Image (cartoon, rainbow, N blue to C red):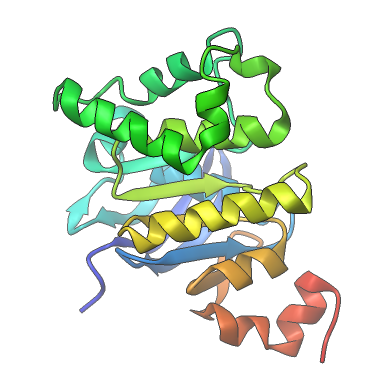
Length: 241
């Protein structure tokens, strides 16, 4: 029986008459870190957008914890416990860091105490955001903006956090800080599904990994095994043993 995490079966999706995803089947476990790798244009962002209700699903199943979410609205997906940190961060630039974090919690109905608890939690994970909580989000550095985007996703109190392009445009030091934070969140029980252009980082961070090529899942398995595979290393990392 599949893990009652995110189960996708024979998914076909795209934009209008253009199909991008073809017969995609995968299981993102309900715990740990999973990575989706592949070249530019492989369909990785489209898959995340389909899960989040931002792209129309033509056929197939998307199930989260045993419940179908194919065709659900983005708000319904968020209410179901899946938060999406999009490529490009998409912060509300003129609003402060803390106002952006408030926006992440806009669908919550569990009262002020849990909200304050989670706000304190994200400030503990990302202390730099606490220092800049009154600063306009659009004036933050790229790394700080990514921290803010992840923290905003966490403020919805998700059970699965999807992150599209964690490290894009960031220095290795900042990437290390973010991967440390994701490891901490995973250890606390949050499931994480990561799209990452830096394949070496993605496979080092993840427990489970999927390889997408031209809209199809062509490989999957334990991340360490894929990282040790010469064909994967040659195709996506540029080196082989």
